Amino acid sequence: MDLSADYIRARKTVDDLMPPSDEAIAALAKPSLVIPPPGPANYGQPLNTTETSTITGKPISKGLPAEPVPSHTNPEESAWDTMVKGVRSLPGIAKQATGGTMQAVGEQTFYGMEGVSPKEPAPGNVPALIEPGKILAEEGRKDVEATLPNVPAGSLKAHLYGAIQSVGLNVGAIGLGLATGSEAIPLLLMGALSGGQDYAENRVAGVSRDDAWVGALANGAAEYFGEKLPLHAYLKEGSTLFRRMITGALLELPGELGTQVVQSAEEKLTRNPGMTWEEFMGTMKDTAIQTLMATTITGGIFGAAGKVLGAAKGMGEKGSIGAEKTAPPAFDEETFQAEGKRLGLEYKGITALGDRKAAIFQDEKTGSFAVQPGETVENGLNRVRERFGLSPLLTPEKILSAFPGAAVAAGEGEFSVSLPNGANIRI
Image (cartoon, rainbow, N blue to C red; front, side):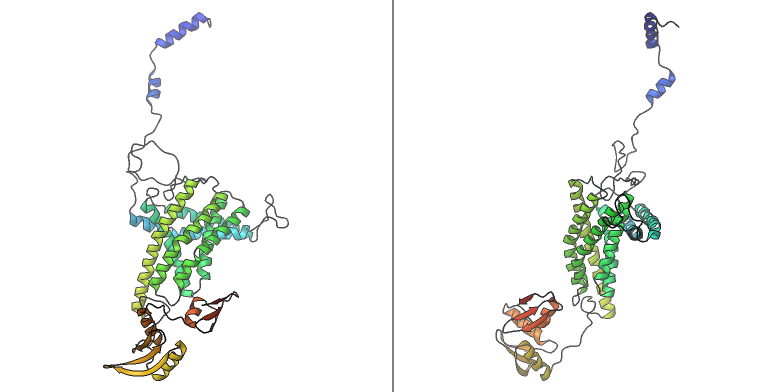
């Protein structure tokens, strides 16, 4: 073969003059970029292969599958379907939390224990729970993913999905507290659900057992203490159910935001070290919106339940649970003399006011006043005191209701209160 410079130059000239083959033309005509079909979420936009959550809008990592994007072939779901999917996700959340708790119990180990180090961890307390816990947590995670709604990230429907999940978990715990009268049981349940789910997510993300355990404890403790004040308001005795729900709802938002700060910090220190300040603030905004929606729904549920119970069982005014209707106060000399002595009033006797009777009392600040049938002496006094711009009469019973377990001693114009923690105050 002639490989001289003249031959090579001649050969190149011939190749340049020859037309391209059919195969070359077909290869050049083949598009190198696939344009997605038009749809409401991606019309006219190039294909985006970044996997993001439709709930938080943050990129999905750790090998989780991409969530669907609304399009003309995969239309956006309605608000009703989104709510239904939120309810359907609850068993999956419970399974994931239970599985994570089983893993945590089986894998429990701490740095600093004899023979235990990060490189050579202990086998765990109950190794038999580890694999079943992993399987159950994975099933729960897949069940939750299967219920993710096909809605735009950060939309009202996306927040509605999260709010329904919160309502489903909280209503069950609050209902358990109302049934048992105990705050500890629902609080421990909420903390265990949150901590167990967090442990499972940390372990799937490759977080070490010790770090996952500490993270789960922090997560569960934040949930426990964040829900303590709202739950106390929900379960407070002697108040109507509607008032309990309003008070609990007002306390929910600051409690949830405080909880979210701790849980976001724990997430950054464990499975998501790349969390940015913008992502953190976005999470706080999502938490605030979903909490407001959840408390509104929760208040409606319990308000309706209170009305039904109040009508069906005659329990208290406006659906108050735990406060059955009481008989009207006695209207006789002995009762009025005892009440006058208890409240520091001078009892003048029963007199007739037209066709009705009334008990007459004398108070140092308001003067004389009448107590009518069906009214307690204390209520009658406070009614008159309100007219004069005075605060309601303070009694040992009211102090004890505000400070359970305290000891109250009455003095001249004041009360000495000894609190259970040893502190003493004067009112």
